[in-house]
Length: 271
Image (cartoon, rainbow, N blue to C red; front, side, top):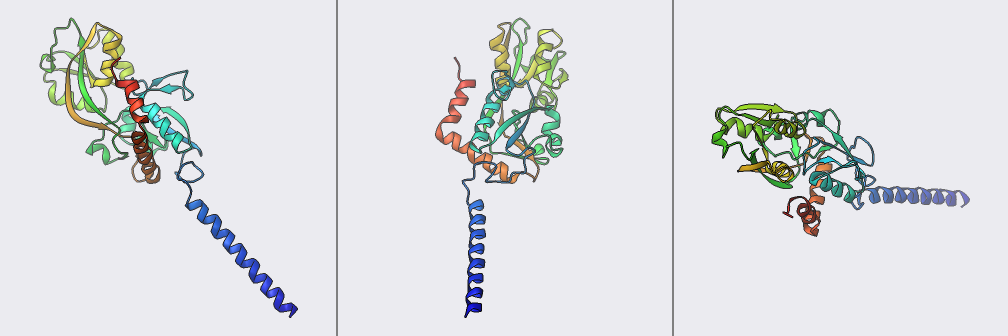
């Protein structure tokens, strides 16, 4: 009788332990979906979303000492809002755009994702997984107001600045007949080159050229081009599916709540 009681007691303890373990496992798998503790995203630094971006590229990304991350802009603010919803901190890593759009920086593990006004293209999809689109853009041509250049047909023999590896560069190659295309790594070199008279025009994303037009009345956008471009956040091919899906979910949530529109209006609505 005593032996039987001990055996029964042992069985009860084992059953209790099994149930406790099952409860812990179930709790982990049925978490809220927000927070690094609920999902294993394979982040470079636990609890922090490390984002690569080509800076400066206003109004999408720019240095900002008043911001906790040290950067601001539409892309930065949007991805920061997404990170907050995922209960993650944010870290912005300045990266060359060409290495980002080619997927090199992502595969090398420099960051968990890229947010750098990057157009979703079939060519880039071969090396990169994209989020859902978050911004629709146009290309544009910026010139000096007294240049005499009225449109893209007036660029023959002119030095036209483009950013290397961008859809703006591709558009210029196809349509700026007779122009001398001068490649720069980013808008941080393009704009000073324009101001110094080293180039006669800049062909790049319309929102970026609009910032320059507003900043200096000696320059103006003479044409915009509807190239059916949409920007997406970038992820290493086949490596960040869980993170990408949750970023998409939170992007949708921000649009549904109206918070996305507030950010959009902050950077793109005329004042």
